[in-house]
Image (cartoon, rainbow, N blue to C red; front, side):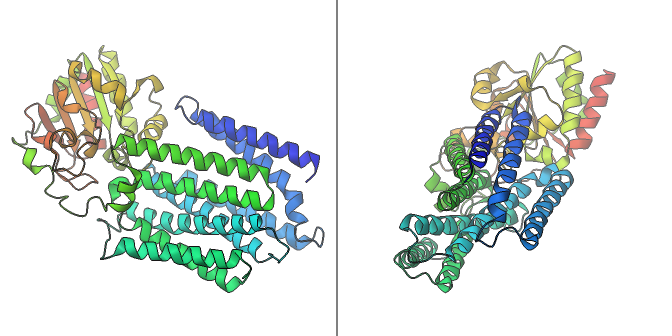
Length: 465
C-alpha cells in the first residue's frame, strides 16, 4: 500500500469516528451522516488503485468497467431508495441495506477464499471464514427481519426442537470451518458453509417476535460490521477494519442499551419467541374499567387549557405520516402558552431512533425531545398526555401485571398524567400482541380515527379557539 493510500485511509477512518460520534445526538446527526459519507468517498477513491491492480495483470478496461458499474449501481439504488422510501418503510429499508452489507462481506470473503493456497496464513483463512459466516447470517437474518416488518409473519415462527436444530447447524458450520482452516481449501465446502450460515440466519430470526425487531436490526447491524472488519483484516484494508469495528461495537452497545430499556437480556430476545404464547390474554387480569371516547372538539379544549402537554409518538404516527401535523399542533399550543414536549421511548417504532428521525423530518425542535428516563419523574405534573399511535411502550401492565410478557420493561408512565388522550384507529393491540390496561383507566380518553386527519382537525380547532 502506498503512503498516499495509507494517509487517505487514515483520514477516512477519522471521519468515520467523528461521524458516528455526531450520530449520537439529534442535533448533529445530519452533519454526522455527511461526515461519515465523506469518509466513505475518500476510502472508495483510495481503494480504486488497489482494486484495479488486484490479482495481477495490471489495470485493464474490463476491471475499470466492472468497478465503475458497481459504483454507479450502488449510487443509483441507494439514492433512489433514500428518496422514494416512505417513513413507515424506513425500518424495512435499513434491514435490507444492512443485509446487503452483510451479503457483500460474505461474497468478498468467499472470493478471497478462492485464492487461498497452502502458503496462505492461518490468520487470513480464519478471518475469511468468520467474515463469510457472520455476513451470511446477517444477510438472511435481515431478509427475514424485513419480511416481519412488512407484516408477512404476524407471530413468531416456532417448531419443536428449534434451538436444538440451530445448535446442530452451528456445530456443523464450525466443523466445516475447521476442515477448511486445516487445509481443505475446497470451494464446494465454502458454498456448503455459506448455505448453512444462510439457513442459520433464517432460523435464528424466525422465532423472534415483531416487538423485538428494533433489537434484531441493531444486532444484525453489528454482525455486518464485524464481517466487514474481518474482511479488512484479511485483505489489509485499514478503513474496513476501523469502519467495521466501529459499526460492530456501536451496534452491540445499542443492542444492549435497548435490551436494558426492555428489561430483558439479549438471550431472552433471541430465544424466547416473545409474543408466541399467552400474548392475547397477557395483561387482561390487571385491566379493569371501560373504554371512554372523546370527540376532537373536547380534546382540543383539554389541550388548549393545559399548562403542560406531553406527546408520546409511536409507530401509528409513522403509519399515518402525521409528523408534520403533530408539529403544527405543537406550534399552535405553544402560541397559547402551553408547554409542549415529546416523550421518546428507546424502542418506540420499528428501528432504533425511529421516532427521533420521524420528528426531525418535521423540524420539531431537538430540545423538545425528552428521553423516557427524564420525562417519567415529570409525568405527575403533566396536565395532558397525548399518545399518538403508541401502545406497548405506555402499557402499565409492564409495571403492574406480573403475568404480562412485558412485565419489567421500562415504559413511559403516561397513566400518571392528569388526563390521557390516546389517538388510535381502533382498540387493536400493539406489536407485542397484548392488551393495554391504560385504555381502561378513568383518566384515559380514546380519540378514534386516522391520526393525520384527527391531528389536522385538532390543529384547526385549537387555532380557532
